[in-house]
Length: 99
Image 1 (cartoon, rainbow, N blue to C red):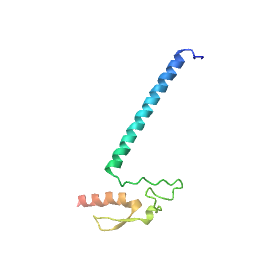
Image 2: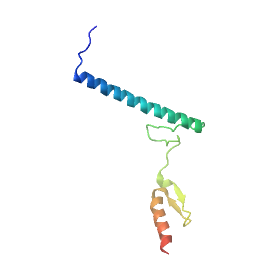
Image 3: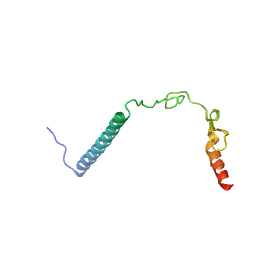
Image 4: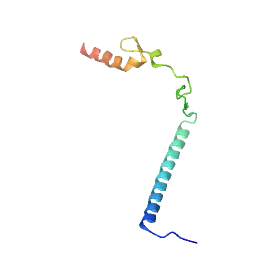
C-alpha cells in the first residue's frame, strides 16, 4: 500500500474538498426541508412546466403575445394593452392627484 506524501498541497486540497462537501450537503439539506414544508403546506401544488423550446408558459399553456392581452383600468375604466399597462397606470394615478 503506497500512501501519497503529506504536503501542504495535499492538505489544502483535502481541506477545500471537505469544505465544499460540507457546503453542498448544507445547501441540499436546506432545499429538501423547504420542499417538504411546501408539500406539507400545499399538497395539491403541481410543479411548474419547463419548455425548452419556449412555446409554453410555466403553467404549460401556449404563450400569448403581450400585445394581444388587455387589462381593464379600474381608475379610468379603459382597456389598456398589457405592454403599456404600467406606464398607463403611473400616468393615470398621477393625473388624479393633480386635480
